[in-house]
Image 1: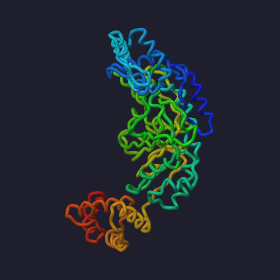
Image 2 (image 1 turned 60 degrees about the vertical axis):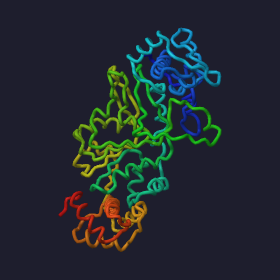
Image 3 (image 1 turned 180 degrees about the vertical axis):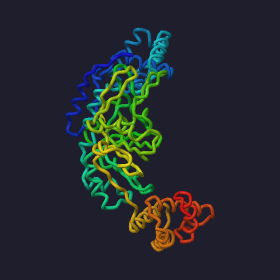
Image 4 (image 1 turned 135 degrees about the vertical axis):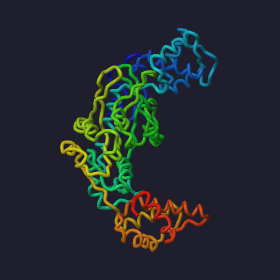
Length: 441
């Protein structure tokens, strides 16, 4: 596999100096891509081998490099009889396919590395981009926090604790009884940081390609076309996404935190913390993973302190990479029962998510009644509390209004009844709901 240059491209450095923030500018030459010509040629050959034939601009769209700098590469491949023309294409272009020699070359390239897709970005360019887009530079205030939580119910007193924690970007524990919205709260926090971010589809270091963009966590967005600068051409090896929220629960293993290399394809996959850079990483149900909490936390003591991590390539070389995300531990257990004092110092904010008050319980029913397309009836919710909560000292959890209305909806649909909040409907669903979910009799 061909190597890459170690210096960041000049266009990227220029983008970092622009007032409107980071935005990767399109490379004007092969040198500005930070990639070798042989690597670009191998990407072209592997793509054409997969699709059979394509136009020059079609190839440009797939490997995400400007056609004007690929044109010379395509002509060189044609001169060396690796590609041939199969016909004309619009805009003074041609369609290309592989010769016999080209197919041999494509097969050799695929055996060395099976990656086909957008050309990778040198690791150093990515490191610079993370530094320019880190959430710690955002420092959201009360107004941004309130806006991020407009579509869910949050106790106003919670903002007094949550606001400074989010503003610091230093990480936090959310703890409390299950069903009180800790995971939902963590997902909303990312919205406090507002703007979208740019990240590469793939990285390259020492000839090793690491896939970074992941559709499970990264939501691509169309760039705002307002303004002259924003409509300028950008480097298509990068994609603009919403600030990511990477959520992982009981399935988390130590392998998920390292570069995963496939020896058959010779392509690597970025770990979860790299995919969450410039966003949030939520460790849900912390303490219930298949690995010991201490083992997981020891892995992150240095990154949390220094804001960088060390990863190992398939070649054995260690890489220093950014660790720039708001890390959130959501747990039903007391933090002090899970970790020692040394680690708790590195997660400076521990916020308890308490049970809902009666006022908030009513507010939640009002919100979910609207989404369930039924009328909110205060007296029916009062009946529910007086009959099924207060006599049993049953805690009011934030998930219960949603869950109970969902079960009433199922009951009404099954019996061909209009969706309504009625005392007898709550009497019917409460028994099965609390027996199964809470375990009360």
